[in-house]
Image (cartoon, rainbow, N blue to C red; front, top):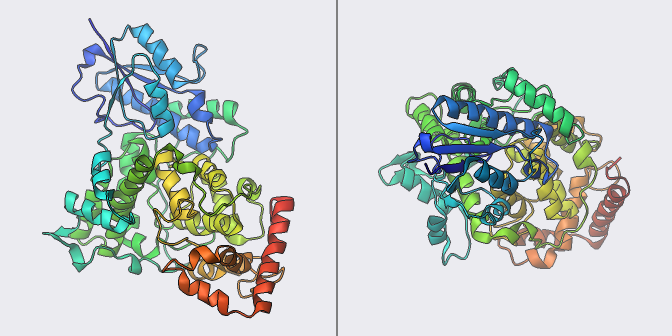
Length: 510
C-alpha cells in the first residue's frame, strides 16, 4: 500500500492545514521533528524554543486523537540528524513513503531546504492566509509605493469585516488617530491567563534548560498557552477583558506594566493554534454586540488582515535578499545592551528587560524604543533583524523581516514606509512614564545629562540630510535643521558623538 508522508513544520500546527486536506489517515504518516538546525539558526530566546516544542508535542497528541498516525522525532533522539532534510529523508525510508507533502513554509531558507529533497515534495499553498502570493503581486503591480492602507481596504472588502455594504463601518477605514492615548498608572490592567506547565511542557522545559540554557532570556516561569484549548481560552479572555480598551492604549507604555491591553495572541496565530480570520470575526462580533468600541476593534482587525497579510506579501514578493538591504548604510555592530538590558535609558531598560523575561514586547516598544534607538545610532539592520528574530516568541522571518528592515529601519529605502520612524525623547515622554524615572533628562537637548535620543535624532537628520530633503514627509524637519544656528547644530552633533563613542567603547551608555 503506497503511503504519503506529510511534513508539518513548527509554525503549522493547524488541523485544517492544506497538506492534510483530502488524505486518508490510514495511508498517511504525519512527521513532526524537532531539529537543531531550526532551533539554532539564530540564538532563540529559551521561552521561544520551549513554546514551539511544547506546542508541537501537544499538536502531535491532538492529531493522534483525530486518527492520524504521527511520527514525532524529539531533539534528543540519538538518531536525529539535526536538519529537516535529514529527518524527512530518514522518514521516507522508515515509512517507505511514495509521496511527500508539505504546506509551503514561511521562510525562504526553509523553502530552499525542502526543494533540495529527493524526491521534491508536493508544496501546497498556505491558505491560512487570506491573500495568496499571486493576489498580492496583482495588487502591487504597477504601484509606485506599496502602502499598507490601500492593501488593507482590499482585505476589508474581501472579508466583509467591518463593512456596511461597500463602505467601511463608521464611515472611515482607519481609526488610528483615536488609538494614541497615554496610559495612567491607576488604570485597571487585565492580566493574560497563565497556564501551569503539564507533564509534556515540563519535559520540554527540562530539555531546553539542558540544551539551550546559555541562550538569551529566562526560561521560567513559563505560562504560555501551548494547546488549542488554552489558546482559545486566552483569545476569549482578550476579547472580553482587554479588547474594549485595546484601541485607546495600544501605543502606550507604562513602567511595570508589560502587557497593558495587548492580546499576546500573535504567537498563537503564527504557529497555527488560532485562526486569524476567526479572531477577527470574534472581535467584530464584540463591536456589533456593543461590547467593544469601533476604534479598538478596527485597530485589532487592521493588525491581522491588514498589517500581518501585508508584510507577508512584501516578504515573498521581495525575495530572500530583502533581509540584507541597507539603504541608510548603517554599519554599527549591535551593542551589548540589547542582550543585557544594562543601560541608564529607562525606556530601553524596560523594553529589553521584559524581552529577557517574557520573550515579548509590544509593537511600540519594538518600533519606537529598541527600533528607534537602532535607527538613530546607525546599527546594522541585519544584525538588528537577527536580534528581533531571536528574542521574540512571535518572530518568524516572514513577519519580522519586513517589520525590521522596512518599517523600523527604513533599510529598504522606503518601499514599505513613507518615512523613517525616527523620534526624539519627546515621543517617549508623550507615550510613556519612563522619562520620570530615567537617569537622563528628556527636557535637556545636549550634554551628558540630556536624553540621548534628543541629540541622536538631530544627528540622524544631519547625517541623512540630502536623502530626506526630497521626502515630502521629512522635508519640513530638514528645513528645521537647516534653520538652526551653526553653534546649536554643532552642540547637538557633539553631544551625539560623545554618546556614540561611549556606546562603542562599552556596549552600553554607562
